Image (cartoon, rainbow, N blue to C red; front, side, top):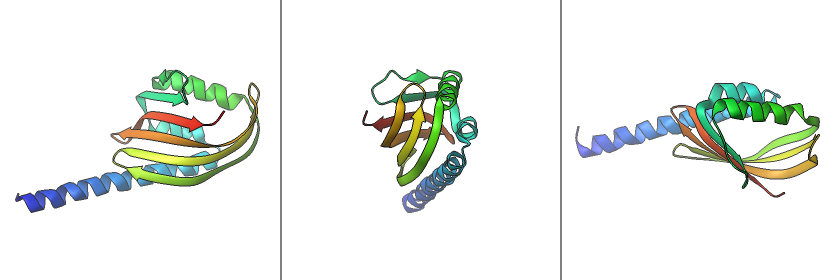
Length: 134
């Protein structure tokens, strides 16, 4: 394969990856907006996923993150809104800006914009961090 064809082949491989990321995120977005966030978690998050909220210590592993997510959703006492404001795709990275509005049993009323940065490998989220003002 000559260098030009190799570059074109690599470009197509990257484009397919970007397309897959977009399709995966569209499915995640659809599931989350339908109130099926845990379905998205089960389908798209890797076994060794690391998740982190702002500067709090990271939670490591799908089992621990599943427990954390289930605890979070169990304590949402009122849900008022969720909106995807913007999304950007990079090489194995998705950055999304969301508006959230809910009441949590421990934290009270929560209304803010937040940004999630997801790092992907082999079709699964391997790291996700959320950034927002507290």
